[in-house]
Length: 98
Image (tube, rainbow, N blue to C red; front, side, top):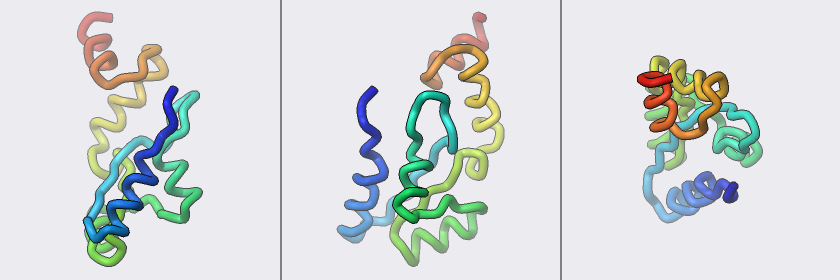
């Protein structure tokens, strides 16, 4: 249960002139997501890949929800709560051998 520093690190890298693309889930039970932190920092979640590319060019930083980047993977990760696992690897193994 470490603090989620990815959004702050991403902001720092973009301030240094690097283009940073962050992807992730928008909600996770019992955890603070990068999406929630970006929202608090007024970094909007992008709603399409073309808009994401524009944000990278203009702002140097873009957060794209996994549901936009890979809807299939987002649906797969939505099973984590139901299966009672946190990590993608655990999720995958649980679906192979429940």
